[in-house]
Image 1 (cartoon, helix red, strand yellow):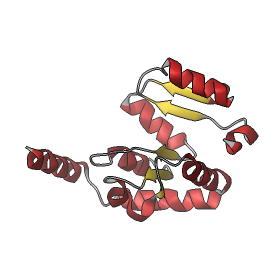
Image 2 (tube, helix red, strand yellow):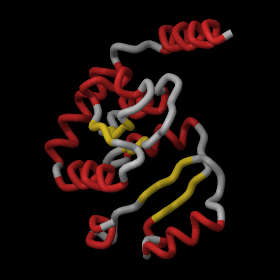
Image 3 (tube, one colour):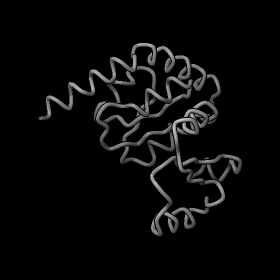
Image 4 (tube, helix red, strand yellow):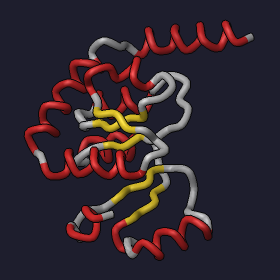
Length: 152
C-alpha cells in the first residue's frame, strides 16, 4: 500500500466482475484508497483500451485454464504481472513478472518495480508483444478445445 499512499495519481482499475460487495468496499475504505480504486463494467473494446493505456496489468489468478487475459494484455503492449501458478507461467514465459498470488507483499513489490521503472515497463512491453506473436487465435481455440475434450 505504500506506493498508493505516496502516489495519489495512481489508479487501480478493476475491470468486470460486477460491483464491489460490502466486504470489498469496507476493505477499500479501511485502506484509505477509495478515491484511487475504480470498478468498471467491461466489453472487448473497453478492455483493449484499458490494456493499451495502462502502466501495467496485474493478474493474481489462483487458477487459470489457459491465460487469455495475459495474451490480451501482451497483444495490447501492456507490461504484465502474472500469478506463478496454473497455466500462466507457461503462457507468459519470459514476457511477464511473476508473483505468488497469495502474497500481497510480493504483488506490491512487483507493482512498485513496474511503477517506478519506465525502462523495465518498456522491456516487458516488448517481451509481451513478442510472446503474443507466438499465439494465434486459431491456435488458442484449437488448444482450448483440446483441453476441454481431454477433460470429458
